[in-house]
Image 1 (spheres, rainbow, N blue to C red):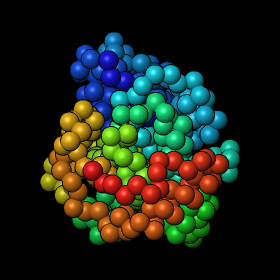
Image 2 (cartoon, one colour; image 1 turned 90 degrees about the vertical axis):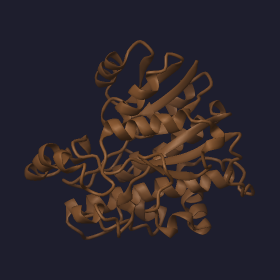
Image 3 (cartoon, rainbow, N blue to C red; image 1 turned 120 degrees about the vertical axis):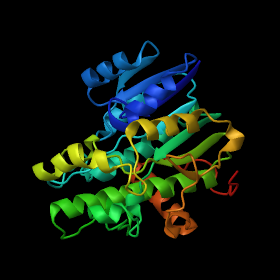
Image 4 (cartoon, helix red, strand yellow; image 1 turned 135 degrees about the vertical axis):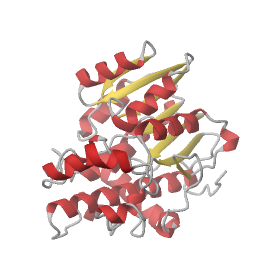
Length: 308
């Protein structure tokens, strides 16, 4: 039986990925959730081949407990959990800005910690078109694209004087840029037969919990107005549609996938990824500096440049 781990699998996109994966009776899905009660309810809704384990990606120790106690091969790890704050700046107990910690740094920590169980498996990061300043839909919602300068700057919260709502969008877009860059760079460092890395851009998905810290009038539009418009907005989808695409990519024939590929909810390679994502120097900087911040050893084979 294949085992897949989905972080943040108790709601939104993560839940739909887990649900579609679990529709195969030969698949076991582990929902890695911060709130065990919510995770258990999600597992109950999915069925008998879904289980829950505690994982708080804002807590470095929680990630280490998860990886230290895991046993058994993993067919796929889905780094889906993500946050966006519109109200204020939040820091973890380690003093790291929380959007960066959850969306990028501790997702990488989890991947590194599970490396030995992922032999022959695959890892899917979740990206976003918000990283692109010219994205036709994200730009309409105030996203200015990624603002990456350095990993240290990200950990500090970008050091911007922008208002909280705009800063929250900038941080989110930047961490999604880091997810894309990390996908491409890890594909440079690993042979695809060892671990296959790729990324899903699920599109804009109105109605998810991403706007839960936004002001009331914005939450109303996100939850009740925009879902009706999703079909006509460019690169817009639903959690069900994008979740199904993610599950199908995770179960697809390895030969049909591009190592380091960034896929849309149509299961096609995205054409909206900015060039900086593929810059080898940025890739080395992001992964090496993140690993240094984690106190982790180097991973993969930095000399490996294979992409297929």
